[in-house]
Structure formats: C-alpha cells, structure tokens
Length: 213
Image 1 (cartoon, one colour):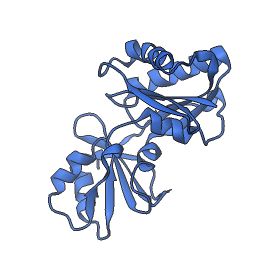
Image 2: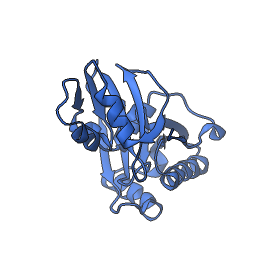
Image 3: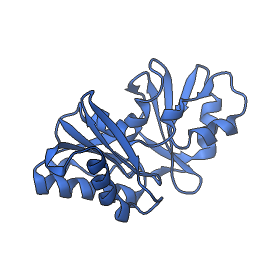
Image 4: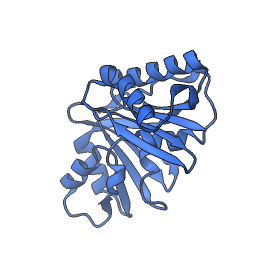
C-alpha cells in the first residue's frame, strides 16, 4: 500500500512516501511558511522522483496538530481534496505521538512543540502511553516543571533543544535523539499506516487553548 504523509503543522513542512519496507522517502518543503504554494508541487516532485503517480496512492496520512493554525488547515485541506478526488483513504495523526514514536523506547518522555512567542505545546508520556492531554503553556513554566522532575525524562519536539538548554545541568532531564527534534511527514506516514481509516468529518485540526494562570 502506497502511503503519502503530510506534515504542515510547523514552519518546516515536509511530505513523504511509504510502502512497506520497499519505499520510505521524505522531502522538505522548499520554503518556510509558504506551505500553500509549496505543498502540492512538492508532492508531485516526490512522486515523480520515486517513479510513482497519484493513481497509485492508497492512503493519505496528515498531521492534525497541535501546531500552526494556518499550516494545519493547509495540510488538512490538501489531504481531504486529494482523498475525495481519488477516493483515497484518509488518516489523521496526533503530532505529539509522531514525535514520541521517534524518541528512545522505554523512557519517560515530554514532547515540547514550539508555538508562537514564548508558548509551547507540551505532553507527557510514560513509555508509549500518554500521561496527560496536550497543553499550551509558557516556555518558562515548562522549564520549571521539568526542573522539578525526580526521575529520568527525555525531551523531544521542536522546542526541546531550547527548553533543555534553559534547564542547564540536570540530573534527570536529557535531550532526545536528533531525529525527534523536528517534525517529520515520514513519521506521520508510519504511524498513519497502522491506524484505521477516518471518516471525512472526523478529520479536524487539534487546537489547544493556552494555560496562562
């Protein structure tokens, strides 16, 4: 089954193709914050370079967020349009899980995704299981929460490097692997390939209200 992955949830967008163990390729969108103009041409370029066509696609997996309001809408609209036009299966993927799956297995993990200004999206996992819902909070508040950790924890996501740097020397909190510090359409495709097909009306962006108290 040829799967297309889309991730336009953050500034650096990407697309990917996945087919079992025979094909796993990813291409970054050529310009930051211009997802509307770049997404479809990048999909076509990746299909062409892989020797595939739209007619061969069987599933489209799209990052539902959290992330940029505009970026999420662009990715979702593109996925829905292609899916409806060619009757391709659609799957939505939680972006925090896409980050978590690229962290080291068997560890407690905090996913920290950059948002606007001094805000971040955060979610905590115990191994593969979510411990919390996704929240939006001030970066400084997240740093303080992590500083209070008393057990080993790995931080991943697009805000992880900055957050861990602010922590300084920590006996318990470490930065995750490089592959888990940027959004990835290939990670979205790999997770979405294992999920059930969604109904069109089920696919909506995941928006998170800030916790600023």
